[in-house]
Amino acid sequence: MSWQRTEALETVFQVLVEFDRLYQPLEQLQILYRDESLIAVNKPAGLLVHRSLIDKYETRFAVQALRDQIGQRVYPVHRLDKPTSGVLLFALNPEMARSMTELFTTGRVEKRYQALVRGFTPDEGMIDYPLREKLDKIADKRARKDKPAQPALSLYRTLQRFELPIPVRPYQSARYSLVELWPKTGRKHQLRRHMAHLRHPIVGDVNHGDGKHNAMVRDRFGFVGLALTACEMNFEHPRSRQMIKITCGTEDRFQALLAKWRDFGHSPPYIEPASQREE
Image 1: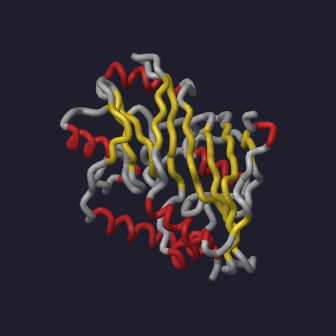
Image 2: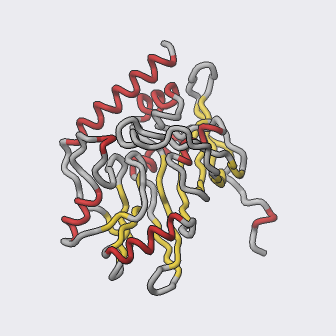
C-alpha cells in the first residue's frame, strides 16, 4: 500500500471518529486552578477552544462549555489546538484577559508539554528553526501570503525510549520516544512542525506525521488522536504578582498506551546530565 493511500485512509478514519465523537455527551471540564480573575481547565483532546471557520460543523467548544459549567462569561487568553489536551487558561473579566494576553504575546508564560514521537530522540536539544505562518484557506483568506519565516525556538528532553518488535516498513521494529517540550515562541503548530523537522513527528499527527506509524499505533494499540499534552503552565499573576504554576497529567488513553509499550521492553529512562543536576 502506498504512503499516499495510507495517509488518505488515516484521514478518513479520523473524520469518522470525529463524527462519532460529536454525538457523545460532553462531560464537565476538570478545573485545575481558579481565583477571582482566572480559571484553568484540563481541555480534552478533540475539543475546540471557540468557534472557528476551520471546523464550521463543530458544535462543542470549551468557551461555551465552561461558561455554562460555572455560570459566568469566560475569556480565552491563548490557544490550544483541537487535538491537543491539557492546561487551558481563561480570564474571568476583560481587564485580566488583556493582561494575560500580553503575557502570552511577550513570551512571559512558560509552557511544558509531553509528547510521544517517532524514533529515538537525542537526550536533549534545542530546535531553532524559523517557521512560515500557516494560513487556512477559509479563516486566513485575507492574510498576507508573502510573509517571511518567523523565528521559532523549542527545547526538548527525552524521558523514555521504546522499541517495539513490530515491523513498520522499511524497518523490522518500531521506535518511539516520550519527550518533554518547551516552546519558547508561539508559532502555529510549532511543536508539531519542529518535531517533524527533526524527523521525529508526534504520534497521531495527521498533517505533519508519519501515516504508517500512526496507522500501526491505531490498529495495534487502539490509540486514536494526537499524542501531545500541555502539562504545565507558569507565569506571574498580573494582579497578585505571585508565581502561578498549573499542572495536569496526560490523558488516560495516553497513559494506557505507555503502559502497553512498557510491556515490550525499552531503553533505560533519561538521566539528567551531571552539568544540570543540583548538587
